[in-house]
Image 1 (cartoon, rainbow, N blue to C red):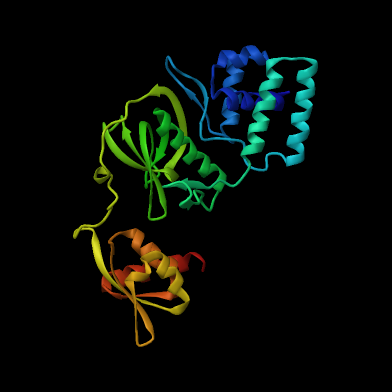
Image 2: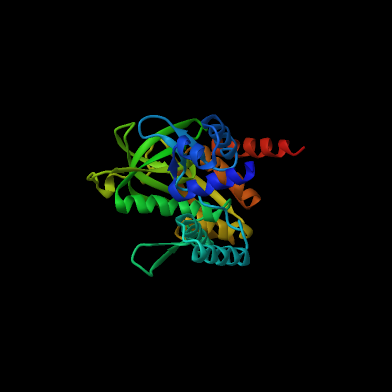
Length: 309
């Protein structure tokens, strides 16, 4: 019985996204206290949380959908057919809603690609290595809120893993150096900010619409590190085995060949991301200058090797 109620609560939230404890208590004939205990159990597996206040309730993050492979194609078809038969015999709304939800989930179980720019000219794989489907759903959600001008409440983790809850007004999606961002007005900071989509753990679409705020392309901080203070002139030696990776990273126009050896002389961000990238490329790329950067790469490589001793 408990499992059935938990599953029923999940499907209710997938349909409505926000419901009250009183609703669940009445529907499943359990106490409000038991409802909250079940919510705690659900939250261990799905992004369910309790929102306090006048507009509060038990909420399911809008970027969450049932995982791919939740049921096979045949199981979806059988379940949908059974619900259609049940609805024909007993035309209750609950059977119709369940059929609609399963049909939508079945259609959504495809690998998603985002088309950007002029239609048909640019195709961007919007997924990540970890889970293409969930990340693509997050992009689609933000894109929808940009178009329809809905404010979004997000749980955001910074580079130190510190959590904050913010309400943002998303204006444009940005794809920069292999990372997705949303350029949004942050009501907490009272200013525009770039938020990494990968650091948004949950996103809840509010019922608040916002008026688009004027901004220019130049206002978006796309040149993250192009200043003398936080950049460094780097000379690299590149092996033939690493040529393709270096070309994809730096651009072929920044590589040159001398006496059968490939080199690159480029201005790069002077931060830990550069050191990590060079270690990632391994023995195929050697830092010739500056010496302090070469030393940092050596130290990081040694520390990684030590983990596996």
